[in-house]
Length: 81
Image (tube, one colour):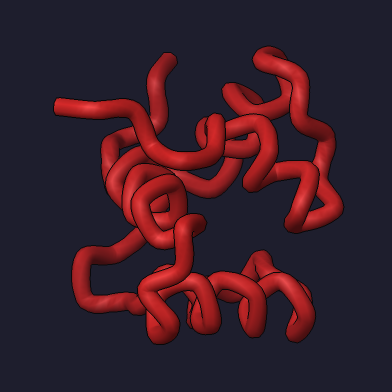
């Protein structure tokens, strides 16, 4: 499996979120698990601009799509301890 075009932290930067490892872990812990039936961009914790960015990345199959998919999967895992 190859690495996504963009690292995870760059997606957080694009979303206007803190992008260091500790902040990403805290975000995932605070917002997991995301219900399987819920589209990632429809999650209640996104601003309208963040949700739009996520939708566009997937719908346009942009080079961000892989890392957005990875974020979706990470948010569907049960929150760690």
